[in-house]
Length: 449
Image (cartoon, rainbow, N blue to C red; front, side, top):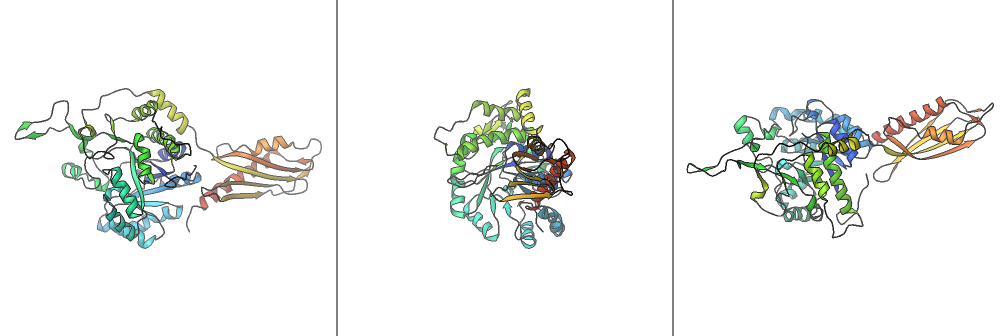
């Protein structure tokens, strides 16, 4: 994925993944990073990734395409659970996990003690609302804060300017009625704590409001705690200008189609903002807004607290109307980003010469421009052709076929010397071995000893 340099440097598009399929969808649609829970200690305890350990598999897939993976360990931890943190994180750390998102200070200190080089991101559950707290967290060893979702553009700007720490902020998805991490409603009413990853969403239920026994709510406007979903497409440039370096989409409980559809739209507009051709006529098309609405709609959208403190227009009030989604839009998303796997560009260099062993090199480039390569040499020398020598164009065609691998040949350079006899089996074996080796080289470059 292309990295951009603008007034803020690289700005990351961060996608949710509640399953391996959602992780793939995010990568295919253009995410720069994903966040995903392991089988324990995640604020989305009911996501698929929490029932079965898909994190290691997702790390491999993401790293093949230069996409970062952040592990959500963002619940409050009980005292007797703290001793298991090291053993829990270690396999992901070795696999190359790029960061851990935390809420609990005990977890924070355990990670800093045992994994001093592992980046730490402060969860929105810790309710960072200003530069003073952000500075303290940086001094303790935090690398990034995920800002509270209830902040304005001015408040985001102050944190970035005064705290000198990476700022991550939500740009799309569900909003909480309360500050994240501070709501006890689900816990008190149903015994399901949001700070243990089991929020029942009690704010989404209908309620009546009374004052001195007088009912204030209308019969068709009693969803008084259910906020509309966040949508910042029209404010995306403002968030970049405010200093946000990671733009986060909410939705680890949502489907791969949701993930791919939302990521693809925000990818489009972030690319426009970060391009040299960006101008003051930045406009969001009705078609793209409609796609977001077709993917998921809780009864309207809002840009939250970015420009306003509070307002009736932020609350859903009325029950969401049942409607049939546009299957054409959903099918197009599925076909483009889910049914088709992404391919990484690779370059092929081969040397075939009579009486010498064949040599094949595959290489690609990392996100920072470093070459990653793998070279394989055949077991036997190439024989002289008895009648019809191998044709260069036939060999190039076979060297370009990467089938079900994660690679796509963008350039093939072949040196063919003499009248060579090269069985098709030899070419296929060399290509397969080189592809396996390059895949391992890419992943090895991300792993830790």
